[in-house]
Image (cartoon, rainbow, N blue to C red):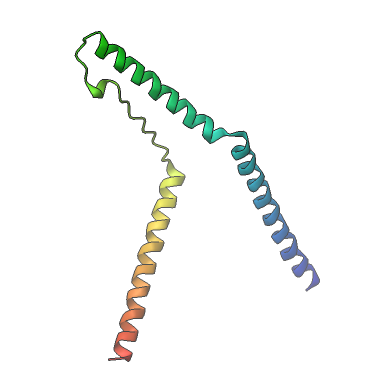
Length: 111
C-alpha cells in the first residue's frame, strides 16, 4: 500500500515539475520580448509598404491598394492538431447531447 501511495506522489511531483518547466519557458519568451519583436517586424514591413505607396503616389503612378497589402496566412495544421480538433468537436457534441438529455429529463419531471 505504501508503495502505491509513493508512486502517485512521485507522479504528481513529476507533473508539477513539467508544468513548472513549461511556465519558465513561457515566462522567458515573454521577458525576452519574442512576441513584441515579431510585431515590430510586421510594423516595420507595414511602414515600408506605406513609404512605397507614398512614393508611387508622388511619382504619379497608378496605384492599387492590393499591390501594397500582403496577407500572411500560415497553415499550422498537421495530424496531431487535426486529431485534437476532432476530439474537441466530439467532446462538444457529446456535452451538448448530454445537456439536452438532462434538460429534457428535468422538463419531464417538472411538467
